[in-house]
Image 1 (cartoon, rainbow, N blue to C red):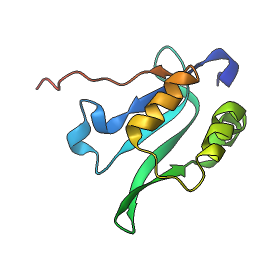
Image 2 (tube, helix red, strand yellow):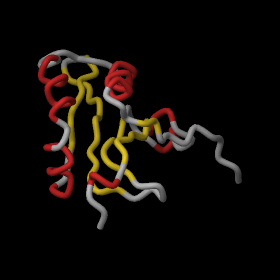
Image 3 (cartoon, one colour):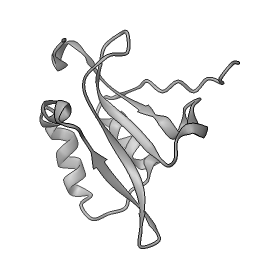
Image 4 (cartoon, rainbow, N blue to C red):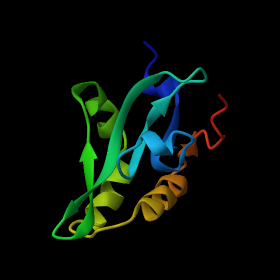
Length: 111
């Protein structure tokens, strides 16, 4: 498997993608991706309704821990937003500011 150093920082804005009808809520997958779509570590920011407000939640599986650890700039920014309910649009702006590439497939599904 390639290391994160051989991949680019990117994200997939799933609830804005061509598959948006299949996504239950707001969700952005982000991490390190290679040219053919593989990943050396990714995680998701999802929004859950808590006390009638959309609240961001970071979800990560154990194969993404090192990828998260290698993003101290993003973690510092998220710590500045502690206990704030930022939107998916605001999170995408943060990712873009930190050099993440938008890898979202916005095209229409052709049947």
